[in-house]
Length: 183
Image (cartoon, rainbow, N blue to C red; front, side, top):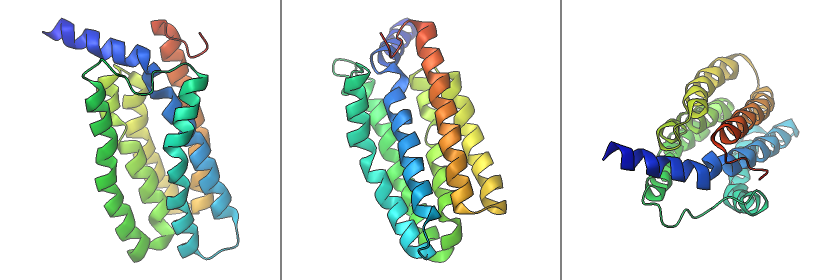
């Protein structure tokens, strides 16, 4: 049974190229959040627009999946449903971010980044990925520290870099397992 499960996990990781399309899309989202937080608006509209930036995740990830020849839907692999569940659970955590939006608006981007990072952990199991595990731990801790001592714009800029490095790590993992996004 364990061999069959691992075979399904390997198939999911290979066909979906370890979710690389979503991580690349998150680089764009954090760049958009950075642009929002560089404006002269008050923090409340900035935070509202921060939420709006996330709306492009699925369309951008879908477009990237076509460009990188990634099986976006993962049909035929029952573990795809687990991947969807791992993603959807973040919606529940966004309720915490919404509370911070009202209670401590200047820390909303910090909490948003922490939630984003933490939600990556189950994908370390699904994709058998050390990168997902490492970044799911690093991002929340890094975001907490940086978010407490800097501005949302600085944290957003740092997240662009962190997500780009994460995407590079996933690219290398894909190459190592023979499912390079460029093939």
